[in-house]
Amino acid sequence: MITLDFSNAIAVYILFIVFTLMCVSAMRRKEKSKGLTLDPKYIWFCSVCTYNYINTKEDKISVCPRCGSYNKK
Image (cartoon, rainbow, N blue to C red):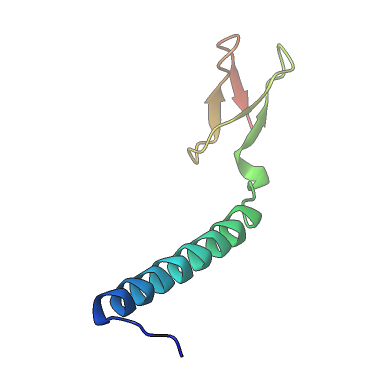
């Protein structure tokens, strides 16, 4: 028969809980990374230098970060 002290039982129980929480955290992290998408309304195309860039502001006119020209959606 296996003998187990009270302090050892508590240590095993805590390690089991920590291991379970780490596994759940790792699985949630994988689920969150799969759902990343970019809305096409934030992707801009510069008509002067043909540079594609992202602007998350909901403006009708944007400034190209490369050449500084104004672009319209």
